Length: 411
Figure 1 (cartoon, rainbow, N blue to C red):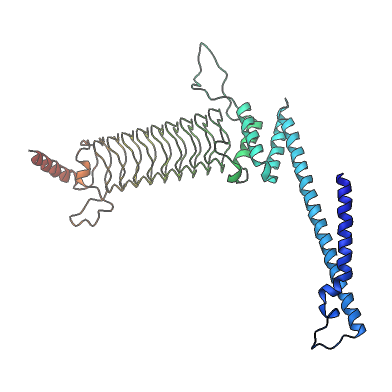
Figure 2 (figure 1 turned 90 degrees about the vertical axis):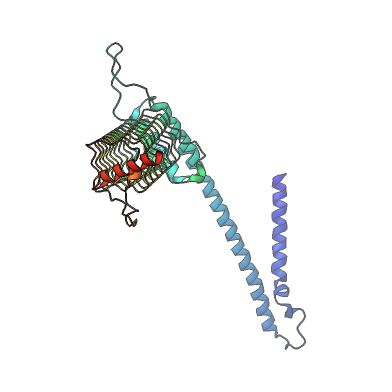
């Protein structure tokens, strides 16, 4: 039935086209049928030429239309063929992932990587498969790796297996197509990824909560808004990583390498940052309340408006740190180095400053000339200091006068 209708439609189109070609002179050159009163009559040769040109124009237009339809049909066939080829590649790659041979699985991951780069329409599917593959092949994170003499455990691997690393590399170096990535697709929580190579990785909004990433390479990784709650990142490399608004609640970052890291507005409440290297890190408005920062290196770190309430900063290096309007209430700063730090309007209520070095911090002058960089006695009124606390010149005397004035005001 459909064939009959197609034949009838083709015959009708051919008849219509023939009619248009035959009547083209009259349709395109009206003077051939009814000459204008003011026009001179056309000679037979002129009429023949006009008729020929009109029919030639219609034939040329018809030919161009046929060519255009052919090109569209060819393009459609090419797209269908290409999609079929990509789908076939995708199917074969999936078969390789289930192989018992490591090199076959690695080859399957690389095949999926090429599909991911070549076909935006397969982006979501391939990414879901790669994440599922990592979750299936990578071991689960454990709470404690301490060897037990009673129940000995094998030493955990120092890095992911090659097939898992290949899948992780494909995930973090994928083409940037946010429109094809639904929320929650990068679910890599509670996995052991110790020593993983993720530098320059695209991990925005990824869920890495509870993941073990000790010694992992996350240099210059994109981790904005990532969930790293309770993640284990001891000795990880996070140099110049982008961690704006990331959730690092109670994360383990002991001895982690974070120079120049972007941590603006990050949640670092209760984070373990002992001996971490944070030189020139950007921590503006970050929440470091209750964080453990003993012996951390915060040289020239940017901590404007940061929360460091009850943070542990014993022996931390805060030389030349920018702490304007930071909240250091009840912070433990014993033997910390705050020399040359900028403490304008910083809150130091109840801070422990025993043995802390505060020299070269500019004092408030009577005319307020140095107010933008200064430290005044009122900021230290309730802070705890001792004879070992190194204060700026004249600060101890100013603090004594201020405390006596406060006592007189109370009485």
